[in-house]
Length: 260
Image (cartoon, rainbow, N blue to C red):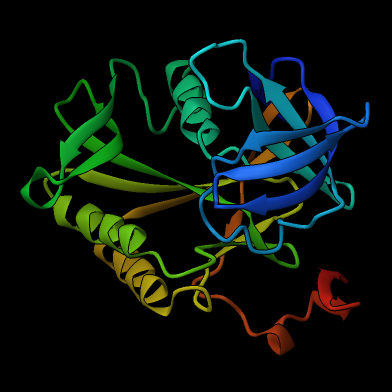
């Protein structure tokens, strides 16, 4: 497998997931036996990846202004590490853009700006605005993706009015500018991507409308390890979330989906 290291973690501390509560808090037992409370940046339901008893890794900050010194970075499911720190995908993509790793997005002379106001009444902020040498602009939105159906990565895993709005606003910048939705697949065991129709049916419809209108979809695969995050390439895209019985390359085992 060819991969490119983009982001290196600071030294991480091993532990076991105990419980998550109040969305932002997670209790973890370290290998020393100490029980710590870490910050959970992912405020969503974490469908399929919140599994108490699983191995995890946390980072520790020495910033005295932080209420919680530890941050939950990843969880191990079977042999796969899954990134759970939703603050990282934008940082990783920013590093990759500045390094020119995604040449189609940042040809020579491209200026990269973050968190630029746009959308209806300038009420939103685009993750990245790419201004190209020829005067063309690209609006680039990033979505963290961890929900799976076998080897298919899915987004979203729940109703997201914010995500729906982002698709609508990306469609609205066309044709005066280019619009790109980049799905950051935060695990290496998925080679396909599909909209999570069963998580949010309206999002799935908007997803297909966005494609028809000209929004470019980039489902990018990443490998998460305790050492760092690697870029693996582009997943194959499916237009909608398949029904379980209609996936010939998957089989059902012990209540979970595995590659056949």
